[in-house]
Image (cartoon, rainbow, N blue to C red; front, side, top):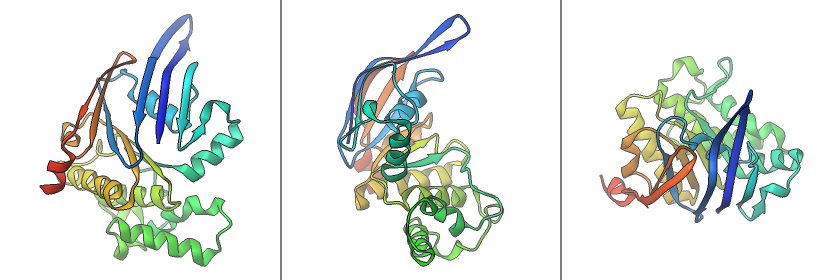
Length: 233
């Protein structure tokens, strides 16, 4: 699903150069649940943005879902993101004046689906994340965990192959964090999604297939997670 070869990303801040990624190579097969971990400033979010088509590397090759992202124009990258990648963020990013089902429906407004088909897909996505009965509720009427489930439903409503999540449990208590990690694992296991998360949360390690550690832009190690143990618990 993801092939990243010798990718470097350098940012310029005044006269300074910040090497966010240094010749990072990463291979993630389809249907894997992977956590990117490391201290602040290690390059985790930069790597996530590169593989999701939100940022371009200064050097190296990025291939996702069979598409070589280096060769795509900005319009083509936007089309790639719309159809291939579902995004989940720490602070949910829900529109406060829209109901849960209307928030989930938002990505489908860019498609040619009819209004009825859009609503049906949004309701199906809410059912997948266990919120079938909460579709008419506004974000403020939902708990933090429920809001993150709505955000995940929005990420999967286009049937994206790849889900990327930046600190998806960072604003949740322990119980809700475990439930969100369990849900992401279920999407991987039952729906064949490839899931890549950036996290500081050590609880994530038991739910994922692989833990990838970065520090100062370097990929330090890749080791097995405890997904089988998490599925059984």
